[in-house]
Length: 156
Image (cartoon, rainbow, N blue to C red; front, side, top):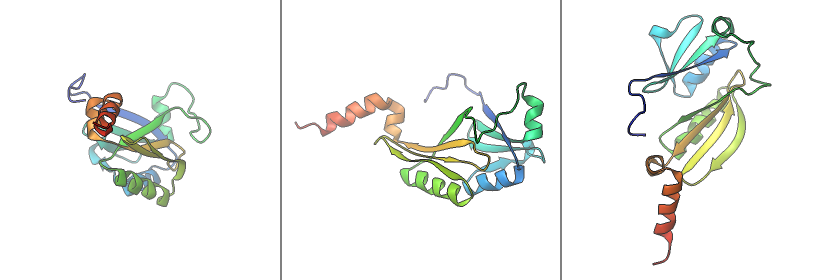
């Protein structure tokens, strides 16, 4: 994770939303901001990471780009969106904010020790997961991290 495979590459994920202003307000309550240079009455560029963005597009704008019929995210899953936060507590804080802003819970908390997550559906039914991973596990990989923890806990 310290050596990107493609330096300078950016990720843009485009998703359709029924009401752009409501969606922007929803995600703002979760702590996201938007790049005004790429935001207008049909689209909003949500900043997710240093080089990762989610484009919230009105359904009409999304249809201009899509070559296939648009699926209803409340009845069909085409993707699950996951973003990380800096602590276990922040997972719970962001999830609570999503529910308070009108989202609905998708799953209860999942705790794997080195990783903790919660899932919710946004206002349009898109599935989101907010997760925290122990920085050592992110650097070493989950198997190596788990083995090192088990070795440290083993009796001498």
